[in-house]
Length: 349
Ligand code: PEP
Ligand code: MN
Image (cartoon, rainbow, N blue to C red; front, side):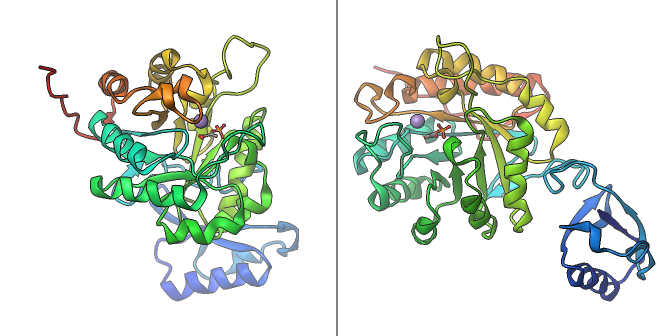
């Protein structure tokens, strides 16, 4: 339920309302509904005696939250949530691009990837250090060394970093290397222990859609994170498994406007794992922005032919540079802006 607080309620009354909510075994989480303070009481609501909350001083009225995903729903937070990743706002009026290789490989590869992503107009750097591979015999990631290469490559550019967490036992390592955004990958969307653990941090989380997850399952997974107190959640549509074998996954473009209506959380799109081919990435990226996505996560490698994973779907930095200009144009046509100043490439002599 949502407890709407009277505009003239004082701090002591708000604190008393919250502690009553907590005494009932519920979680009290603040929100703003059309500039009015509200407290969401989340949990098993059967135990609040009828009319008890309404009778507390400072309470104006109580509203139900109809959706099963309470904190992820727009009922809880009607305005768009802006997730700040250091100085970068995701979910506001500007489109942000996250770019970098599928896997962190070597220090040199990451330095080139970071410089390429930055020049191309990306605002965050990605790179997987722990890789969820279909085969146990495929490259599994550089692990701790990879986190270091990623952080070292991003630092000179002041770029925040995004990398995938597969196991709660690695959280301390992620914090040690200053990971700015924790990615929960497709295969772990319903790993509830992992979701609860990242929910206990305040680090922003990118929650990728499960291979065959419905939107409701996806939002319920986001709810697991939010219910622990971390509302810094970004949803990433990356294509779903379909009947069509011609491309890696089917980008669910319809999910973008649907989610923007249903949730306040930012929605980004990963066109690389959707199409599975570099040549498809520009078309899918532009479709995603036109449909209302708040940003893109694009695989980009300094030398895709030599990539240790997903080379066939990686753009070169030059291709990404050309694409971000088109993304900025579509953003502008849909009343939004592009997140970074776009720099021209030096002319080849
Ligand atoms: C990735 O982004 O590197 C990745 C493994 O993606 P997904 O979880 O969407 O397959
Ligand atoms: Mn990949």
